[in-house]
Amino acid sequence: MKTYTKSQLALRNGQDRDEVWVAYQGKIYDVTDSRLWKTGKHYEHWAGQDLTAELPDAPHTEKVFEKFEVIGLLV
Image (tube, rainbow, N blue to C red; front, top):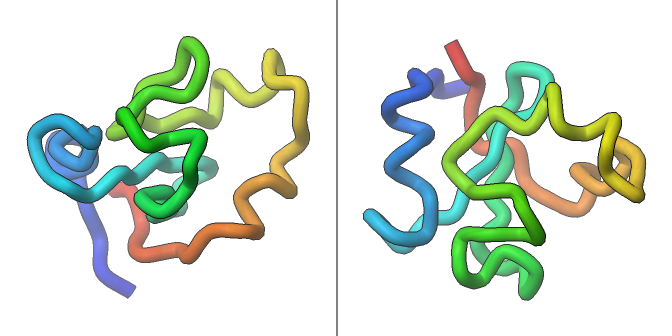
């Protein structure tokens, strides 16, 4: 599986490029097609970031990531 740095992930924020990606527990998910991430922002969360530390405050569990394709690993 392809690996990406935090800097590379940050470019996939829905603003700098068309891709909208987020990371969780070392995996990078493509959320581009999610209506909830269309602008690169989901409530107070921004795409292009590692959301691992933010999930405990979310109203959902990590199962939400099962809907999305893992496209790489965060290194």
